Length: 273
Ligand code: SF4
Image (cartoon, rainbow, N blue to C red; front, side, top):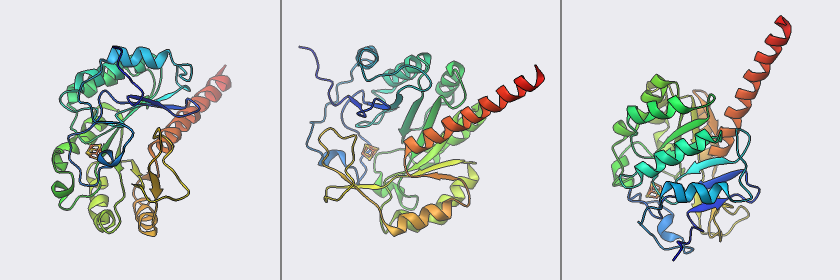
C-alpha cells in the first residue's frame, strides 16, 4: 500500500515554502516539545526514502523550482540529522540544491565538517543553504533538551560553517517565558564566541486559543504566544547580531541581501561596459 505522506510534506498554501519530514517524531526529548501534544498524526519512525519525498514534492503543483521558488525546510516534525534520517536528509539537500531552491534546516545535532563541506561544494549561489542550530536555553540546557547533544558540541556547527563560508544562525525556539530570557548574557557571549551573525527568536506554541494560529500545521491546534519578555530579549540581542522572529524572515533577508549584491554587481558591469 502506498504510504500516506500528508504529514511528511506540508506546503504553505501559496507554495512559498514546503516542510519535509523523513519521519514523524523526534528523539531529542525536549520537555517543551509540542509534537506529543498534536493530534493530527501518530509518531512513525519509518524513514521515507529521499527519492520518494523528492518526487512527490517536485510533482506537486504548488512547488516552484529555483532560487525564487519554494523554500525547502527539512524537518518540521522530526530531527533531520538524527542517526536514522541523516543519509536521507543529506540526499534531499543535494537534490533541492541542484534544483536551485533555497534549503533551510534547523537542528540540534552537530553536523560533521565533511558533510558541510560537501554541501558547500554543491551550493549554486551564496546563502542557498542555511543551517540553524537550535536551543531554547543555555543554563541547565541538559535538563530541558534531555537527549540532544551537549551545547558545546552543537555549537561547533557555527565554527564549521564559518570556516567553510556556509550561512548559519542560532535558532532560539521556543522562547520560554521565565527561562530563556534569564540567559540573555549567556546567549550574547555565545554569539560573540562563535561569531554568530543571525539569530531567530521563535515564539512559543500554545493550545490556548488566540488570534494567531500556527498556519503550517495541517489542522492547526496551536497558536503563537508572544510576551514582553521576548521582545526585550530580542532588543538586547539586536545590539550584537541580526535578530528575526522567524526563519522565513531570515531567509527573506538573506535573499534580498543577495539581490542587492547582484544588482550592485550589475551596476558595476554596466558602468564599465
Ligand atoms: S528537537 Fe524539536 S521536535 Fe525534537 S524533541 Fe526537541 S522540540 Fe521536539
